[in-house]
Picture 1 (spheres, rainbow over the protein chains, first blue to last red):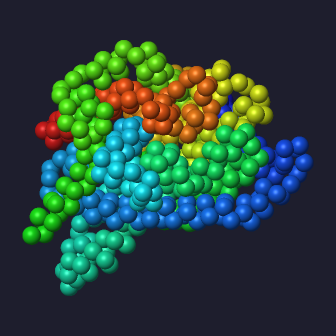
Picture 2: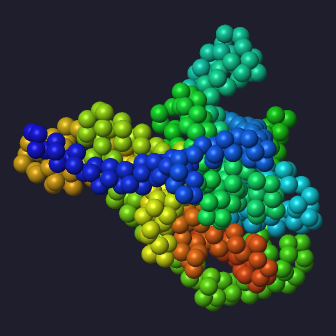
Picture 3: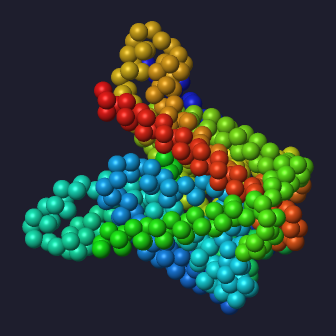
Length: 266
Length: 266
């Protein structure tokens, strides 16, 4: 049978080559560029420069602040929404859920444009409330991505667990905090990972809402505009390190089937 | 009382998610240039949208790119998923791990590193569209992979072996036995790939030719420009996309609930 095994296995060859060229090779190129200067000499300047310049450190802090607040706001809106949807007596729950996640299929730049027009009408000058607008814009953009994984976890919860808790004397609040909430942690984590990282890097939302403060993504954008591949690669590597750390932390909490939007969206 | 609270909360979330896009849709049918101004009914935004060559090219280009990238990503991702599924445990987990990199990675980093590798190191000019297409396939293929794998796991392996025992060649068995069983995963992977490509801004902005625009890059640049007739024509585009998404989701739900009803009848 080895012949058959070879045939089936060999189907992977094009994809393995593809991953090697377009996923693995760029990482090595990034590392090379991050640790060399314009004349190809090895250097640590890009790294030390980032961690000694108050501007870039400020950018790092501002990115974390925006991402943290935005993730928290998304969570505070998405959890009750997902909870109410999952526990509603409505017969076609999937239709109801669809209404809440439908906006994610509309191009984000058009949705942010819509938000911008409304905010301009309400606030007048958008530049007056940069932080508020950035959080609002990102929440508007990413909220469906938080609702979906939490809903998926909550709707799979076995209702008899809650009944058991109540039979054993827990009231509604206790049953929620001691049974439902701990069991929905995988959904929460998966939602957080889909909101936190994009809100550290999606600088277009800030740009479109006239928030001129840099976040990590904007640094890459500005190095790119200045053809400074070395500085840009270092920022990309630092972002990759943050992503790796974040993934390692969240991985252990996440269910196999809810990893990434691939599983969650469909 | 509790139900009233729930309804109010859910309604507020819905208003938050839909108000901007709905208000923009209403205003797209007027000759107003800012939201809030009360003007008469007009279809001129739709006329501009469908008759301005620049806008038409941009929409057509975005769709062509999305379909092309999704098609390539679907072929590669599906082959990769099947090949990797039948590989040994080690190579399967290596492929799965590498496949996860673009999934968790920030789009800014994926786009920037694709640009460095293909444009800066390999010297492929952006005008060939190769970096753009490669970037989008890199974005999409891992998600196709992820939506095919669960279907492979659900498959009964003995059917494939039975086909071989009955004299089918491995290629025939793959085509007639394996493929029909994973086709729903392949299809949803393709749909996901199309939506990812349509929604992308960062990879396009780092890899596209200067003269080419996708909807996202065009809209982001248009919000910085002062051309009012283009700005309001984009309102019309939002309305059209909103309607299309609504119709597709409604059709998908209708089909799903239809097959559900059939099943419950049996």
